[in-house]
Image (cartoon, rainbow, N blue to C red):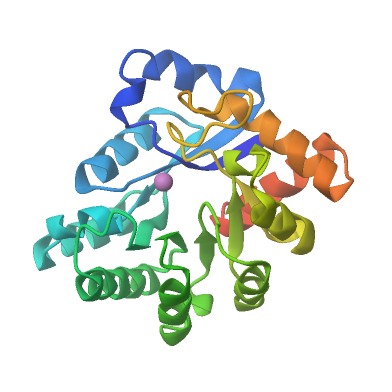
Length: 257
Ligand code: NI
């Protein structure tokens, strides 16, 4: 079954039908979802959902757009939550965002480093967000020897060469709806190039719905469209894509069978 390694079901876009949608996933081929915190509020909601649904896991971390929420005290809260909540499987999403560019780059980098160190301390993998900051993200992760921490480069948008480097460091590459877009040549090349054992599926829902739902609200139930595209690119059956990426997700989040 499918493992959605990156979702935001805490988003307001799901207020109308969150319960019904989440409850319906297992009977529709989605075995598990990791709900990823982006803000502190998102982290709290992710933990609540993970407590409530057996098939939902949580990641806690603060996205570069929200690092102005962080303080020593709040970083401690993240650490405590990561340690105490059994279904917190990663620290994320954390990283750099020069597209929205809400905080100064140095401020973003500082909190990125602090949260990487936190992940190392609590022994959890990281979920990396990088937008228009590919080289800085890569350099910082190298500097911090983040390969030893492990994790996923979520919604990967860099070059084939950089993807190969990340794979060498031990990272997984997160691939979602963008793969189905007609103009997405680079990510298609990445998906064809790196080992299938390093690819995990993700929605980033409510964002980035695959074709034919492009522009609409995304959800885990649309992942078969990404599977289909990946299956064509790799020349393996959709069943095989689902099986392998699900195993990968469990290795990424260190979930024993
Ligand atoms: Ni996300």
